Length: 253
Image 1: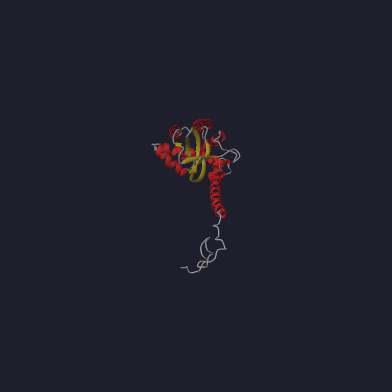
Image 2 (image 1 turned 90 degrees about the horizontal axis):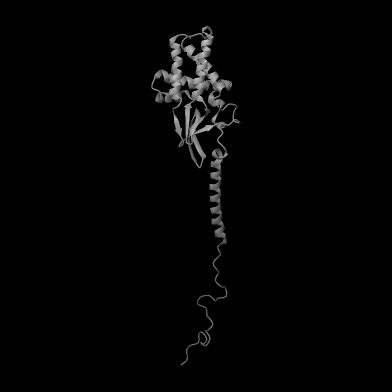
């Protein structure tokens, strides 16, 4: 790989990493990262093994694009390029994990609904801030065009991210990234994932309580007392009051 054009391609990759690696902060507020725990699948971190595999894939891709046969190139020089590439990628991807960025509707850290989820490589960079790189080719192209002005560096940045994606896929036996590490297996924590059902159960219990109170209150209300049954009907001859003449006796005099 002594051709200046090929060296320039590698230099462009390094430059793109320097420009893009510190970009794209995402603050909490509408977007969240779902990340995986060790029990969800074997690899959650962007490990040196993954980066080494990604560097090999990237070198092969660039060599194919330049029409080079790597078997005919100086092995020492190729190994040197790989070492430098892995070092640059390690700086860019250090501390990153594979996860998903989603739009979320929730309350008190419990997620009621999530949608528009995209795979990303991310790391926490502050209490309310993450730095991420999209792990989807179309999204990577879109964001690279917004963050990087040089077209060649844009292309190189996308190649680098996709090389890591393909390395993850190779490690998963050739499955697509989203198939190998599906969102359904995301580790979100019990409250985050199930808090919505607890909220729903509380609401149902509160409604049931008020319904029960309303129904039981009606049953406990005493009925109005009935009129006594020993009174004569209206218009009947009532007994005279004490000291009064008998009823139906015409007045004397």
